[in-house]
Image 1 (cartoon, rainbow, N blue to C red):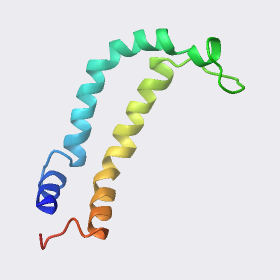
Image 2 (image 1 turned 90 degrees about the vertical axis):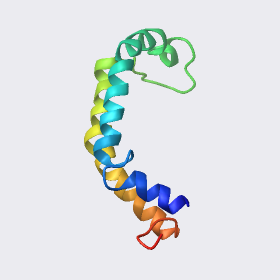
Image 3 (image 1 turned 120 degrees about the horizontal axis):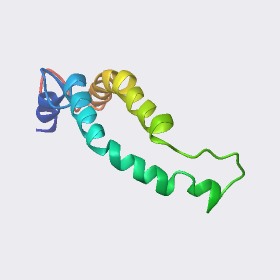
Image 4 (image 1 turned 60 degrees about the horizontal axis):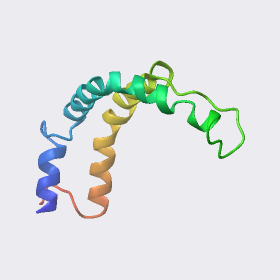
Length: 100
């Protein structure tokens, strides 16, 4: 049952195919973008100014220098590859295959 469900979502335009997963992630990240400004203002320099748990130098996290580049990295590098990696891992574990 798991293998059939995995195949449904990981192939043939399923929810976890690269295009569909990255499109959904891009949409959600756009919804969160304005909130990230407030959160980076609130917590961006916390480790540097309030609670340094190790020696610096520390960066102040910002939307433009940290959030946006990470979103771009996920959309261009992670999502295009992840589905294939997951299918391979599931096949190796006997949890995915054409015979299911």
